[in-house]
Length: 365
Figure (cartoon, rainbow, N blue to C red):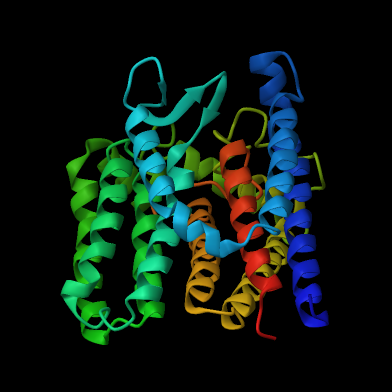
């Protein structure tokens, strides 16, 4: 590797290590009481997160030495496997449900969330097609294969149901198409139905309507649908500018649901304040900037689109999580990348970064 490539490789690894390490600390802080209460072990979630971090680092470093061009030959295998896994969540005895959603597959005692894998499989499929058919992306007919692939994944995910991941898939597809060179006309034509589908999906399910009303006025049902958002706002408000201190959160004492996963940012805000959240956001921005830098200097179009796609997924999911926790959009379950409890998400995101590191190694700079 050249000096510039080594520097980028080093910075990306350090930033991911910082986020993951901080995530493990915050998972313990947010979950120690609930883990002791429900499982009799305050380290229950921490041990799972450390295991996910270990596997994730192994995958990240391993894939950084794996030539990303070989992924092209594996793309249909990865896509097919992702489809199978998304279907298995609906099979009794294999798929597992929680809070009315079927989003996990139990294999050999381990739970896997297929929708986390589907995000990056979509990136691979889009990156390959857009890199090989650059001349076709200006026509709707040329875009049809990408829309079909994205559509299949979105349909399977929304059936779980998981509107948040569906939105992430849709936004990722749109951004990759824009970077891939689609016309402004097609961008508008695709954006309109995407925007209109959001209220349609909300109206299709009564529980989504309840979440929407809770978002508009959470204090109308403080013990019902509005409870989680209110507790999240209490947590953020209690943190003020500099927070109440590490491990000193009050909301983690069974007040805030999913404090260690989807709403871990609320606990971070309570313990480290607004300043802590700003520093965390800056860390994400730095990581995304380095990933985009890799995309700009990639040796070929496939590598550029692949690195861009990984950056898009991390950015989109981070923005959506922050928006939910702060009450900017209706509550929906989506983990904070590298931070929230969840081994599947951690391993998959770190593996995706490993692929980008390999692209960096082959950079033109």
